[in-house]
Each structure stands twice: as structure tokens, then as C-alpha cells.
Length: 240
Image 1 (cartoon, rainbow, N blue to C red):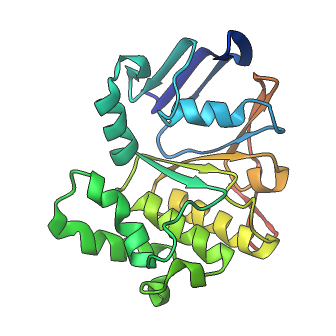
Image 2: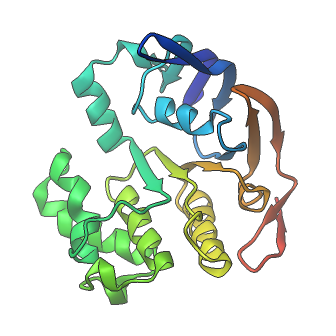
């Protein structure tokens, strides 16, 4: 059973009785352990699709099944639990708590989880270590570089051990070197730790770090292909 199944999905926004169709019948599935890039230009519908898959927004028609269950059958409490326990989010703008430490930022999702408080410290320290920021644990996040801030965001996304990590333009605010390091971290999370990664991007170079690219344009799937030669941090290619 696929982890995610999207079938004939549509999304239309309505504002003051003005309808704006964004998704026009999108269909695909994603298995556990995949690293998929959803790629398209601005306005293509890729971010709307992420919001639907991440239980951040509803859909107009069609079907979205997560772990075999139709998303529209979940109530508000159930969707909140899924977002906290099953999903991790990484955003272009980092969305960190200002003037709080790396540790406190990574710890935050555990306050809203069912993870026993006795496990919080270990989980937080482990997540910080995975992204290579142990030496910055007590730093105020305002003192960090952009690349380090994004790694804090990745650690925060990891701390509840989610099924899926959604990365929405995670390199958009970074220079090429920092962006490459972030993409290597996401590759490692996929290959070494088994996390399903869904990457939203408009950049071919970034998308080629994934194993599969779904291209979307004007709310429709344009192509869905495997990546034969994957990008690596050093700018080289990794064939797998």
C-alpha cells in the first residue's frame, strides 16, 4: 500500500465568489522511503499540492489517501495529530523562534506530541547531532548562518520521527554552498535513516538530488520520471 495516493485531485480557491482553480485532476502515488521532488514554476500548483498532502489545506474533489485512509475523513484533532506525529515541515524562511536556542527550537514540537517528557532531551540532542550542530546546541538562532538555521529547521522536523518530511524550497534563501549542504543532509536522511522526503522546488539542479521528479505546470502533471544520475553536494553526480 502506498504511503500517499493522490487521484484526480482538484483544488479551487473561492474568494468573494471568485473561483480560482489551481489543481486540475492530479494523480500519483508515493511509497515509503522515496525521495520525490515536485518541480514547477511559480503558480504551477506545487505549493498548493504540498499544503493538501501536509494536511494544511483541504481539496475540492478527487481523492487523497494517507496510509490508506481518505484525508477528508479525518476531523480537526486527527489532522493535528498527523501533522505533529507523522509529518515534518521545512520551509524556505526557516520559521524558527527568534532569540531562542537551537535546543529550544528543536524541542518545540515535542511539547505538542504524545512523546513522554522523559524522552524529550535525548530526542532533541539526537536530532541536533544528525544535522551536525552539536557544537551550536546552546546558541541563540539569531547568531547562526542561513545554512545553520535551515539545519535547525531540519532537526526540528526530525524530532518527532515523522513518516514524511516536506521540504518547501529549502534552499531558496541560501547560497549555493549552503544549499548543497542542505540537500546532502536531506539525501542522508533518506538513504541512511529511511525518511520519505517530498521536496518542492522550481530549480532543476535542486530537484536532481531526489530519486524521482514529478513536474507540474498549470495545475497538471507534466511528467513523472526517475532520476538516473542524482546530484551530489560537491556538484558531481551520484548514479543509483
